[in-house]
Length: 290
Length: 240
Image (cartoon, rainbow over all chains, first blue to last red; front, side, top):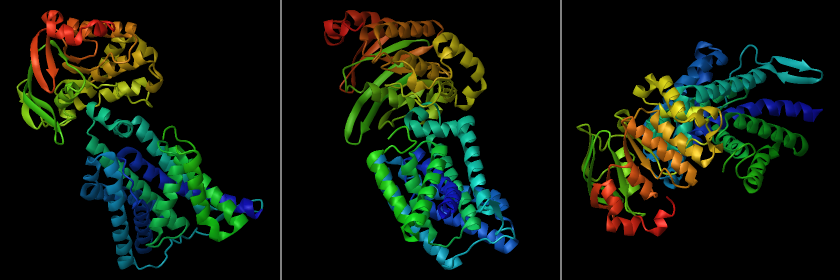
């Protein structure tokens, strides 16, 4: 019974893991750049939602509409300032340099967040924060359930953009073969820019949902980057819904381990999963290619 | 018309083209023949804007296009069908074709061009919703050519279009190219099947070691001793 309750909570947090991972997977899949500051982008989004709520009582589910686009712009700027030089290098140099830049950015954003907002843990506590839906003996926190549904809706919208829109298709084409994309007249630099900004926006939205369902502090970035990375490895590249499903798998695995082994093993199970998948199925559970 | 003058391209310290000059007149088909590593692909990529020239100029209809990004070169009417086809393997035939019409000018006439391309390659319209990676080699090459046509080129550059194709697909590919030639399209073609390339072309250039060593009418090249010995020997003819 405790296990079932934990699995419900695991499912709910898994949706957010999936959303965080989808952003990372998008930037990695298109730019071949690993943005280790992805978790910090998520943290920024969380603070955005937190301050909009604290200062002007804007409901986080509403302020998403502002936080997403704001993080899109932050992504544009950071790409323009830092990452546009990286993508000009060959693939191996890209990965190395993007890791260095990403770690640097991680430190800077983390420190700035402590400087401006202190190291305190914060959470958005809305009037309906405690609302719970009861199914038999089990409790489903409504805010977390809404976050899961919203995460799915955001991925659905992104999926439609990537498959139907002209620029969405250009992004997918660039991910598959950037030289061929360039020959189609697709300005590859622009698709990189848009994909990176979209990845940031996804992180921002995930952060806003984290701030209302869980809590945020300046130091959550690394933890979320790690979760996203585990899910990307778990699910494989190339599918948004794969990331979402992978996130839920991770959430459920963590919940199981918390119940059976105890809380301290929560982080361990993800990393073990990470290693096992890398050894046995390096293309990921749902990935088509390596 | 295309005018390449003293084009030099290098990969780092390695020079691939040492001052190549050539021209292509409107409605002309030009073949470039040469051994592996002569710089043929480099030349084609430089014209399409994928590689930067170190020195020299490329003019198209009087405008300089060297140093321009590929999208500008394409908008002006030059499309490259790259070696190895480079399709978007996980997308459908239709999506590949629509991506071929990505540029602003090509967007406008997209539907009409799609119908035209389907009439040239009826096989592709049957396979419209199939994923490109699952097509046969011959169909993939047709799709690669069709995708380039979606960009409304007036000069189509083909890099090894017959590589890896079964003989009957080579035949049908070249008959399509001959048809497009009759419709007034210019081509620049590099192909291991030298015999067929020279038969399609009006003029030809021989590229060796990054230099043009010979040029002239394609028909005459077919009977040129040097060309026959190097590129149309009994082994080369075996594939044609």
